[in-house]
Structures are given as C-alpha cells and as structure tokens.
Image (cartoon, rainbow, N blue to C red; front, side, top):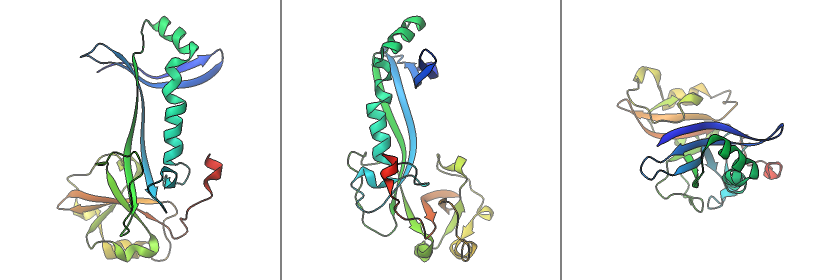
Length: 211
C-alpha cells in the first residue's frame, strides 16, 4: 500500500465533519482505499456475548458504541458531498472503505465466558480480575505495563524488572491501583499472558450516559 493522506480533515466551511484516518493506494489493484482504524482494549462483564458488556478500562468506552460509530459515521465520510469536492481537488477517487478494529479482549479470570458476537474467533485474549482476587494469579513473574507498552507483546524482558506474585500482592495490599493496571506474565524473558488488575470498586457502571 502507498500512503496518500493521514488524518485528513473533512470540512464544511468552518465546521469539521470528521477526519479520514488514512487514504491509501493498493499497489496491486490500483484502487484508492479509505481506512478507518481503531485499536481498543475491552474488559468483558456479565453476559460477554453482548458487545454492550465490553467496557474500556476507564469505563468511558464500550465495544458496541465504538462499532456503531464506525459503521454509522466514520464509514460514511467518503459519501458526503463535501468529500466529493475534497477528492476532486486532490485528484483522487475513493473506491472502497475499510473499517479495521484491532486490539485485545480481556475475559474475567477463571470464569467461562463467551466471546462477543461478531468477534474474530482467533482474536487476542487476556484476563482481568479484581484486587481481592489477586491470589488467583498464577505463581510467576509479572511486569506492570505502562500505557505505551499495551500494543505489542514483550520479548527480552529483564527478570529484575518484574515482580513475583507475592510481591505483586504486597504492592497493592493496603492501597489498590487507582486505575486498572495492565500486567504481563513473563517466562524466560518472554510475555506469555496479559491481563488487567482492577480495584475492588471497579464495577459495572451505569453506561446509559455513553449512549
């Protein structure tokens, strides 16, 4: 693929209607493609077969809402009359729109749970558990991850930077993490599992405000 434009705003006068994530050319077919891309991480609660029960770690996002916005708004940007005018000025024609939603789904630990309807069967998986359930963690080395480390699996990890299960529990014995913490289980310097630790107050919120 050849990148034509990234984060290209679509405007109607002084008002911004949206933004094209990527406009690319397929080198094999010659087609111009509009890509809308999102990378998301969701924790499943209650009936995990329902997309509405997959929440972002900060509980400010939901899988069904993100999917609906991709389908109802972002996928249609190239159909706007203003988009036709923009493409004419740029000398391009968009042939196809692709919605690309990547990320990882985190299932409640030690509980049999269904994947959300429509999810790719071989999607990346993880677990989540509340602070009070830390004893369920497998005895191993664990590395708390910074936000910038959430994307790619880890390799070549120095064991000295990790905490064993007992140290991890001691770290949060009296004061749990204020925000969900992503952790990776490390074996021989390689990540083999990933999960979120949430505090005991992390409960299913009233998500009607997210609609």
